[in-house]
Length: 479
Image (cartoon, rainbow, N blue to C red; front, side, top):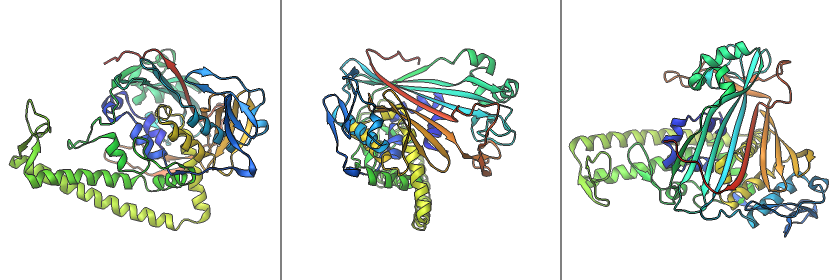
C-alpha cells in the first residue's frame, strides 16, 4: 500500500486525532523530500525565467503569482521543450515567484482522490470489500475522497482542515452487485449506495494552530516539535532538507526500500532517552499525564511513584526491543539493496518517481515551501522515460510509468503546477482476505488488472487532482 493509499484510508476520526501533528505534513515530507539540487541542462538548452513566466528553450509560457495571471503564452510550450525541460522550468518558476498569502487570507488547497473499485469475489485490496481487478468484474464504482487545507497568511490564524469522507460518484456495470458490496462493508457508514450516489456526506472541518514549536505528543507523553521531528530525518520540509534532485531521488528510493526505518529508529531512541532521564532522576514533568497534577506549573517536576516508575521502565524495555527489531530489519533491507541488480534498482527508481508524482497532488504539498516543491519537480524530471503525450492549451500531458502503473500527468505551464495525475494500473497486490487485528497481513499475491467491457478503458484506476487559490476566509469548524 503506497503513501497516498494510507492517507486516503484515514477516517474523519483519524483526521481529528492528528490535527495537533501538523496534519499529514511531517509524514508526507519525510517520504517525498529527498536529496540535493543539481542543475540539469541537457543538449545545451538554457533554462531561465522571464518577467512573463517560464522560459524553456526560448519558449515563454504564462505564470500565476499569488492568484494573478501574467501575460499568457503565444507559443505552445511542448513544441520546443521536452517533458524534463518543462518540469525544470516549472521548478524554477516556483522558486523565483513563490505565492504570498496576504494576511487575513488563506491559500486553499483542495485535493480529490478518486479511485475505481471493482467487485471481484475473493480479491480484496481496498477497504469495504472491493478489488482493483477489472477482468471478470460484474461492476465497479468510482469513489471520491476530498481533503482541503486552508493555509493562513498570518501565523496567528489557525490552519483549517476540511475532509469530505469517501463517497460514490459513478457506478459501472451491475449496480446491484456494487450495492451488495458497498452496503455490506464499512463504506456504508455514511449511507447505502443509492443514497450516497445522490448526496455526499457533509464536510467535517477542524482547525489547528501550526507553529514551529507546536508539540507532537507520543502515547508516552513525550513531545517532539515539528522542527525536532524534522531533525530526526534529513529529508523534512520543516527542517533542513537537501535539494539536489539526484540525491533527493536516491534518498527517496532508499526511504521506500527501507520502509522509513532509519527515521523511526531515531524517533524511538529520542523517546528512550527521555524515559531514561525521568527514571534516573526519579522525577516527572508536572504536566505529564502520569503525574496526576490537576493544575501543573510548566517547567516543574514531581517525584515518581513506585507504580509510575515500574510503568516507565516497562515502556523503556519495550521501546528498546522495538528499536533492536527495527535496527535488524534495517540492516537486512540494506543488504537486500546492496544486492540489487541494475535492472532491480531501475525498477525501484521508477516506483519512487511514480510516488513522487502522486505526492504532488496532496494538499500538504501545495502548502510546503517553494524550494521543497521545486526539488520534487526536478527529481521527477530525472526520470529517463518521460514523454509528452499531447497538449491542450497550457496543459502538457506527460507520461510517467513504472512496473505497476502508467501515470498521465497534467502539468499546467501557466501556473507551474501539476494539477492532475491519472493512474492506469497494470497490476497490484491483492489480499486473500480483509486484514484483521488477529491477521493484519493475510496472504498476498500480485494480480493483473486486465480489462472489462463494462468499464471504459479511458477511466483511470486512480485520479488525483489538486487545485489552489487565495480565498478571503476559511470555513468554520464543525466540531
